[in-house]
Image (cartoon, rainbow, N blue to C red; front, side, top):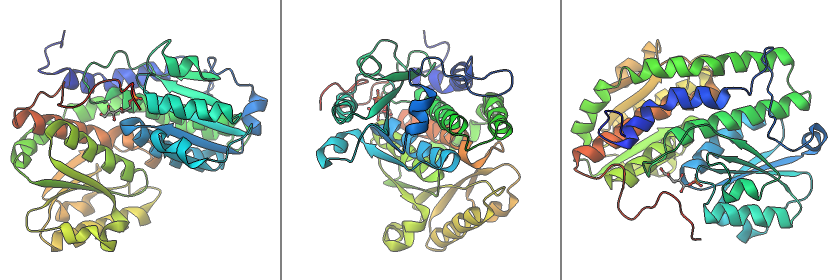
Length: 369
Ligand code: F6R
């Protein structure tokens, strides 16, 4: 049942290229534009949207954080992402022209469901991104885009996260397309890069032996810090969440630019800092800033674990441990950079003797508020 893997989590990590491909399947027309049949919102509804809220919990919330960058960049519609458990308690400004996107693997998360109900009461349109057919969240939504990740057994979410990202990208591109903000050839260019991600991810998965060795080295650390910028920031948060929930270690993710405003005081001799470096192509300035953050933590004794794009040779000098990922456009990079962090958390947890698939105190589907 685990298909030769020691844990469901490792099996599900390995299934990610297929999960991405399955989630893209049938959603892209020959010409490379996006077809979203299950979305029961008319093009006019989507043209009327003047604000997007993404609500979700945990890992799905991190997917929403990535989505915000993509949706705002592609559609120019303001997009907020909010923890579902906080959303309705602060009386958010919602109306008919607000699109609320509820992201949930299980479709049963009570916090997300309550946020969705609140949004509907305020007349907002609700679109669910969900992995579980017929579950409550899609049933109560105006429209749904299913992720085709297949069943996720391990409590820690992996393939569901990557497929949530894909679904968010599709919605962003679709919105940009119906609103005429992106030309068809621009959409097609992103789509063709998306189509290449399963192969790129297979290539990456084939080179993870080093991460296993690294996990054995890090298993006795008292803390692991993660830094990133732009879409690398939610990836850092996700890496830290995985380590907390599986290895029961203290871990924290930061926006790299925030280090100097406080967290850098945590750095001591040997403190492991995982650094997610943006692609040098396109946004070179951002990449250079992260590289200088890496130098700063290293100067204070940190042991740096650097995740960077293949060919970004400038980072080598600052990396105690380098993990290279295939070249990917900036907004799509989390489909690559997250994966070594999943494996790292899984292997550290295993090295510490924990039950990777069933971490203590956690349930797969959180049906209480
Ligand atoms: C972490 C994890 C959780 C879930 C969260 C939301 O690995 O799995 O943080 O992402 O409980 O669950 P869903 O997506 O089912 O609403």
